Length: 165
Image (cartoon, rainbow, N blue to C red; front, top):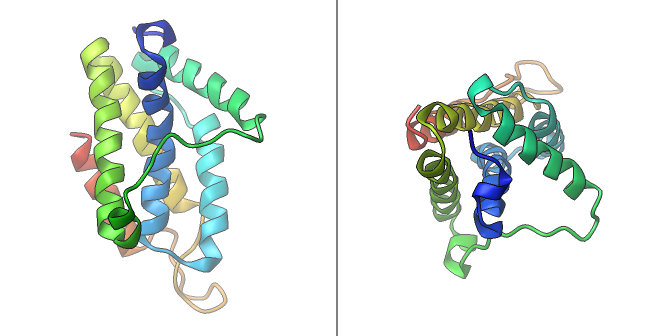
């Protein structure tokens, strides 16, 4: 099992950024004004409370502790930057996010065990799934809406495939 001391500050930042990017990946997959706020809140809650596979408990526990500390810091900023072209193209944005998530997962695979890497990936997927389920999409006044839209299902499949799950 790896710990925070096994990673550089930049690498640790990547590991912390991955679940946020995974949740955001799901949010932008089906942007609906009514669900964006619920999904954002769901992502934050999932990062802090999502069940963690046993093989990644030490690593994810340390990440969650840092998230809790960072959530108290009003001046905390994201380390993830997009190029001007990526900002204008939603598909390029999603591709950049997916690459960053994959790189974070690869870091855990390089420095930890295969089981720990799989646990970290499952935790990220759990955050993404909880984000997708936090808001309802479609319908009128809630009638005919769904918990997870087809676009979100496709994004979950892309994310799962990108993580090799």
